[in-house]
Image 1 (cartoon, rainbow, N blue to C red):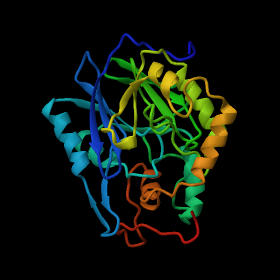
Image 2: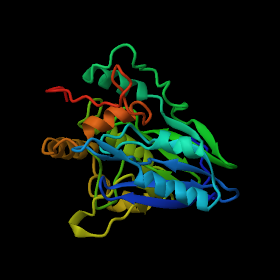
Image 3: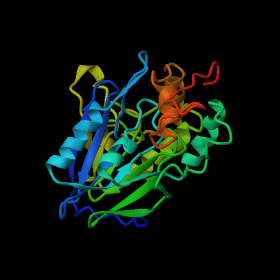
Image 4: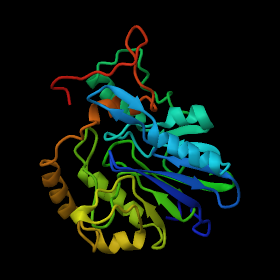
Length: 294
């Protein structure tokens, strides 16, 4: 990993926020030497059946930031989520900060711009975001360095963000007893996902890994933090030197049995717009439901 400027002597302070409706964990990541922070994978609440948006989860994060007198430098999206809606623009309006995502958001926008028949007015160049990261790009959270690692496979735009001795893995990995995320979305690929996971597992053993989701397998309590060493040894899908061929076979068979995420239709429309809710021709917030299109 010498190609990446990683310094595990820097130990950011990490506060987690769990959303039970989507099993998502959002994070406030604070520079230990200043009051600057980043917010990773925030959640906007939606009652899909009622067509109602609320911000309880985002407000909890905002309250934490304000209570601790923090300055938000970045609002990071590890990828275009298909199972929850991003609250990044709502939080940005309240607290500031730049919204960043991987540069391959453009691939996702092109794919789902067609699915949702968005027309030429929907820009497919990532311009809805303040920053697009390429593999190895660095950015600052206060005085602390962060680096973005390109980790496709779950989606084409997935990135792992390494901040000191902590890495925020999005859906590239789950807890050791949870394994890995699906690879059957458009642009996903099980073999590519395996390579991305190996890239993460090449980080130092002591690197803290923070999950974007946990589902409490076998009834255990929800957890979201582990280490590279624990994943390398014990991850049920890739640990213990499991081969790429075995992983592809398992992941492909498993994905064929999975239903689509229940919030995939609103999530993709909103998240490919950096968290903004689309509008109709009269400017009213409106979501589309493509038939036989996903």
